[in-house]
Image (tube, rainbow, N blue to C red):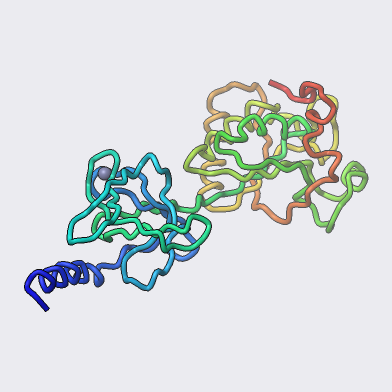
Length: 283
Ligand SMILES: [Zn+2]
């Protein structure tokens, strides 16, 4: 082996030191994006990483070809394609044509050039409110879909009767209230904000009644899921009582959430399906 060849071999072996540098992995089931350690530009998705057997973090495609600049690299007596960060010019690694389908590319990247940004699965919470006819209540909360509210479902809760039908609940004898179950992302919309909406769409001072709708199924109620929700609900009720907005006392029940039974399909998004504006809502 002449000196020149052994120098090349030594240089080729150099990156092996980086073998021990594992790139960080997202927590189980989580998703992550590998960003440029230098400037934070998104480079590769964790989902598009594969085991190449080289010890180097390997990806079959970048997040965007715009984010990676490819340059010919004729160093070390080889013709290779160097990959660098388009934004800050940091050296990332090399790209080879022996990767898996569908691209056939292998982006062979130095772990030290990457940092992992973990996308946490949002933790959703639930809120359930009864404020009279659920058609209008559902419509009011549906306005927040995409703004922190993930879903709103009309249904029945608070009674002692499994799987009630609309007819059962209408009899007023099942103990259930017409209610809506809201799934929300507390990082985007707070429970307090949902409480504000709840108070604003009905009259919480009329026992078992909202406008023309009468019966225990139309009672005003907050069904809490956590001690924190219970506390916030009680505080907001006290605040509203103290504000003297109503001449009568607030009669809203604040009780632990029990089984929620989604209403029949034709009740879901009722106003939207009918193409009419919510009517049974009191502002
Ligand atoms: Zn960069």
